Image 1 (cartoon, rainbow, N blue to C red):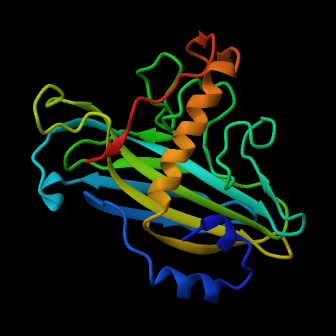
Image 2: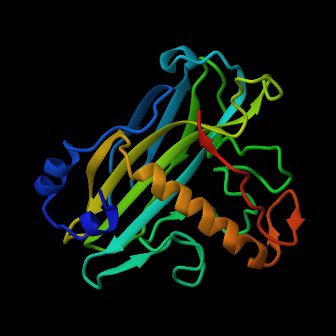
Length: 240
C-alpha cells in the first residue's frame, strides 16, 4: 500500500476501506496510544510494552526506545512539509517520509541527546521487558488542510543477550501508526491510530537509509549536552 498516494485522498472512508486489506507489521508486545487534538495541536503519548513471549522470543532487552518517522502533506499546495528546519527532501524518502528530530539533535533515536546515552524524559522514557517505552509528542502549528502521519517504531537499544544467538540489540520490536488532519478551519481531527501495516516497515527502512545518506553532510549538531561534527548514522536495524 503506497502511503503517499493515500495521503492525497481526501475521503477518510476510502482510506479505511483500503486499510482493511493490509497485513500487520511485527508487534512483539502491546501498544497504548492516548491523545486528543487541541486546536491545531495533537498532544499525545505512544507507549509500547515489549513482551518477547508474544512473538516466540526469549531475549532480554535492557532498554528499548522509539524512533519516529513522519509524513506531513499540505493538500492545498499538494506538497510535503517537514517538521524541522531543512531543505525540502534533504533527508526524506522519495515518498516524503523522514525520521523526526528536533534541530540540533545528532541522533535519530527520539529524545536521545548528543551525549549518546541520555534520553530526555519529556520526549521518550525508555522501556524494557514488561516496562513501557513511552514517546511524548505534541505536533502542531501546521496550516489548514494538512495531513500529519507518524509511525512510532520501538527498537531495542541495549540488550543483555547481545552476544548470544537470540538477541534483541538493534532489533525492531513493533510499529504503530497515528495521524491527525487539520480541517478547513485549521482545527485538528484525530484520524487513524492503530498498529502499523506492511509497506510501512519497508518505508521505515527507506527513511533510515535517507537519514544515513544525509548524516555525514549535516554539519555540526549542537544541543545542551554536546556538539558533534555531524549527525550520527543508524546501525542496521531489523525486525526481531
